[in-house]
Length: 395
Figure 1 (tube, rainbow, N blue to C red):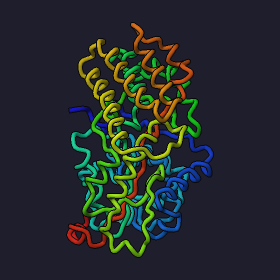
Figure 2 (figure 1 turned 90 degrees about the vertical axis):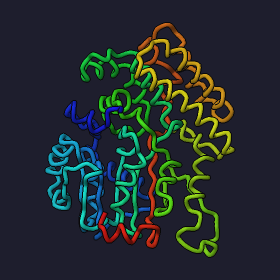
Figure 3 (figure 1 turned 60 degrees about the vertical axis):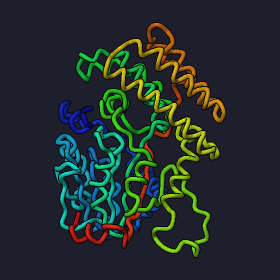
Figure 4 (figure 1 turned 120 degrees about the vertical axis):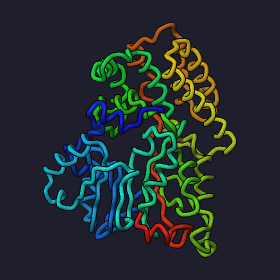
């Protein structure tokens, strides 16, 4: 089995999720904007019960704590993350008084009562577990009937830019080197790329570890479609960031909780999944079948990268290039900049050996990033299948 995110973190004694929050007001502003996309205004959390599963080092938790929940539990299994949370919150004693930290894995955490808000960022998208749907259900069971669940998803289209960089990185490093040496090898190659991303607050070395070296980030995917299907029957899709969910129905035509919310979300996802390919552009909806074919081409690239990491067969380089070229052909129909970036990456891979300096200086490939992880909020049905039973059990 692929090493999980937690196993990787524990082995290296790291929590590579550090952020630049020297401007705390700007950090809180970014979090407030995210919550608004998801349908959460600041007053909604005041006096409510909240659990965050997998908060990492707690940077994002500072904002949630500032909203004055009645109870706020942080469930973190990584010992380094638990230590970092304590150190971070020690600088904000008023906020520290509002949190409880529980050192436990998501699957092992138990609570006497479910929570009105459940947050789980990053972990479901990067956990590298053989069954992401099972982990999602383990997290979701802590949501009270009528409460809200917030998760992150990732798919083969949104992650394609990272997957291409990952393949290049894996070709450039020596797998026998220690982690620090690998990071130092890759920083001059990919820091110029990351510097093009407006609003980037994460340290470049942490991003490289998590996206290019962490084995979990090439593990099983949990797409928006997969998350909706997993939770259908008890939860309804509510909000998203990017905010692509639109419901033009007259509210009087919506008879109850189980009235097509998830079906609408799935339709919107497949009509807009191509827009996850390049964060620099906003593209109109496309035909669902065309986008599903695009998804399969992106997935084929990802599969080839996974196979390379298993076999380390350098003959994979032209194979990945060829699959990228088929993606570029499909993308040219709706995005010239993204198609040019993908074609440039394929051309780099067509060379006998990868030129690290050429990668760093690539004019089209360097600024191309997808929309990475997407946030999705769900409302738990008050009378959905199993809701009353789970509520009595308390998760």
